Length: 329
Ligand SMILES: NC(=O)c1ccc[n+]([C@@H]2O[C@H](COP(=O)([O-])OP(=O)(O)OC[C@H]3O[C@@H](n4cnc5c(N)ncnc54)[C@H](OP(=O)(O)O)[C@@H]3O)[C@@H](O)[C@H]2O)c1
Image (cartoon, rainbow, N blue to C red):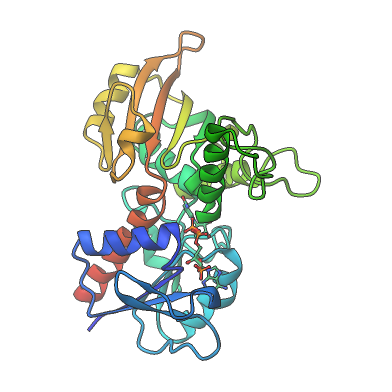
């Protein structure tokens, strides 16, 4: 009997989690959905949504998939663990905790061995980068990365998508442009050159800091140099990344293509696009080319659905690995 909880089931990621659990026929006997008091009385896919408050029944839950923001995870993930659940958390709340494994299913599943009930899912833009980079790091070692992201609006949640829609409608109909609320500037027909928020005194955004920290933790290599600019673009789903990779050993673009052709979770494409990646689980890699300005560098273009591999699919893949361990225990 496996009881699975989805916390944040009414959100962008939570809804995709429910789809992915069903598509992959994850063995669930009992699926319990949680959201905030705003969703009291709501249903998702015909299932009741329970409010996550002190009256919530946390007993008997084997696996809890959290995508309800950092505050909810900080408060509630330990409570689920105390009740015996293993939590896979999509927020950034626990990723920097040394006792919490940060896992990409194709890259470092071995890190799951040491979990203490809590496992962190990486940030969406880091996730797709890791799937593409891990085979290269294993083969040639990565010395330095220069990454520019083109991150979609769904990465900020459902309110951000509503903002994009409202601004787009206003612009096209000649109506009054609503003031931006989620982003610091209009997102429709625009580009925001700093995705994420600035902590006091920091000249990098939290999105950029996440990519730097999480890349080194997942690839288990603190020596990797990383220069990153995270940008928000008016795309609904799928993040794109222009990536320049400087390796420790020489590797040609042709060798990189060969490595990636056999790598799990990767699909090679000439010029991947967010629209074509949306709804798919693969990380699409294209435009792999030698960098003529450096003898050990190449560039590539990496695109993936941030709600699927960037969040829900990886969480369910981790749950599958955990369920496999439970079955063989
Ligand atoms: N979107 C992405 O690409 C992506 C990728 C990786 C990680 N993540 C992370 O996943 C989380 C959710 O992202 P999202 O895009 O799905 O956001 P979202 O669309 O805004 O959904 C947020 C969900 O969290 C629930 N929630 C909020 N406060 C809660 C509370 N106090 N107790 C219980 N549930 C609560 C909401 O319930 P109500 O409907 O009741 O408000 C909703 O179900 C965030 O931590 C985000 O950083 C997102």
